[in-house]
Length: 350
Image (cartoon, rainbow, N blue to C red; front, side, top):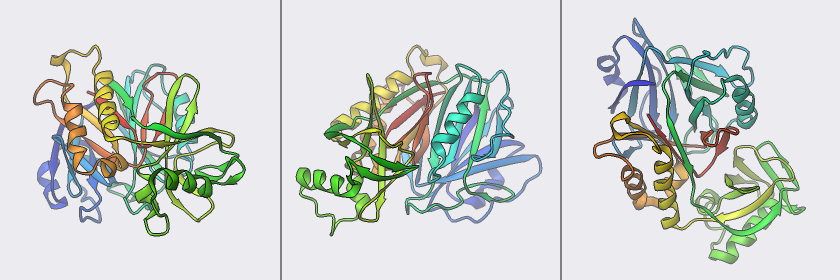
């Protein structure tokens, strides 16, 4: 999928880095830039994320420059209109970046998945900034885009692993009223009241004096699935009644309020890496593409480096770990369907 991966600290360094070819730019949100300069023979698109990861370290400022292999195609599409998407018939893997605050991500992924060849492996994440405000964060040399997605299609194969490590605190409940990414009622009560009561009982945290997102990083919601792990949904804001989530939640979904312990979170990252590289020989591994949730970074704080090490330990020495801290994670690890996750670690072995 990728020919080379490099890192620059400033946009001004790009002209010396970009030679002829196609490039994906992953930009950390504190990197100052307004536009990407056009260069002859160079095709560029990219997205902004809270942080990026390069050689096992995370950065709030800087740009990952991923040069695409000639056999990899790159396209920006409107997630409300997939008519322009025509996937190559021989693709084996896809890396997709979506607008992380779009209310249509799940609908887009469902339609998108129906259009790609069977057995195609898919990894991706939600772009956006940590201010939790939807802004145009996907771009090319022409403009910025809102409610769009970047699609990289490749004939190369990848390994995938997905794990989160969160455990149920209370539940199950029923999402008795939910619309797109807005959870309105839990068991016929205002969603925020149910959420607040459970967390205050467990932690003693005062919601009146603590920012909501600071609390929700530690207590996400989990969609219950039959004989499968939870799909985690992250609460990002509230109006005192409803809870706004990253990702769609259907009415009548069965929910639990989750809680994380650092050891479980770290173990899950290692398990995801082992799943991703299962049956892939050491000599075949080029690099590791990590799509990890920004909330896991905030939750682990100084221990986030332990999560990177947990992933690194599953690979040969000096294997390069690179990627994004995202607002939502995408994968189809079980080949049954594609999912939009929150607070989850997705590991791709390239």
